Image (cartoon, rainbow, N blue to C red):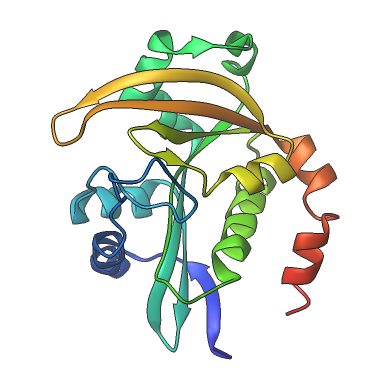
Length: 205
């Protein structure tokens, strides 16, 4: 694993993204999972759109893509159905104070099994790039029902992310989905994440 590196995604990576996603279905027979996984599908065309318009990083091992992360930029968020759905959210905070600042949205993070520390390294790198590029806060959602997805919660906690809201949605392929919405402020990320023992350990490896 000495040849593992993080780089910016290119359009040709989209096929690899679909293959990785197809390896990681969420197990609906479990009540909760810390392994993550996908409930909904993403097409090659959608991945190409993300690569062209958003912050997308990949991790490759000997030129094979083994993981990727996608963060949507502010202008993409505000043109999306996601932004329109904010009116359907049960907010626990005053979200209006975030409407006039630059935002980013953590769309996806996926990894093939067997790369213990690299998913967290990639999450750190893509979050840092998002904030370095001007985002003042990052929004992310975690599925609560039908399966509680706990994979992202440790990093959210380290970054002092706050539980900002909750939303109910219906998707034809899955049915009812309930998700928690978290917000990570850039100043909390810079203040708390780099000094956390986990990240000191990661970057010593």
